[in-house]
Image (spheres, helix red, strand yellow):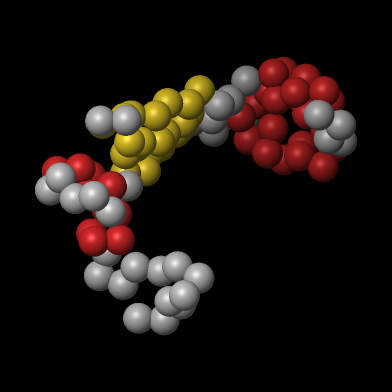
Length: 89
């Protein structure tokens, strides 16, 4: 994928990517990784026969709030923070 990250004050707040959409590249990389191309044929063919280019990104809203509010811990931005000691609200 063509990937990117956005950082603010040393903290990652957004990650995104665009899928590789070139069938020959997908088949070559699958072979290099030991993946039988026949097992992903329908996926590769979707790009060969017209699937549009696509990608996306995700925003870590709690991280943005933590940085915006100058908080020292991301747990302070979550209504129900989770950790090994707290698995239920």
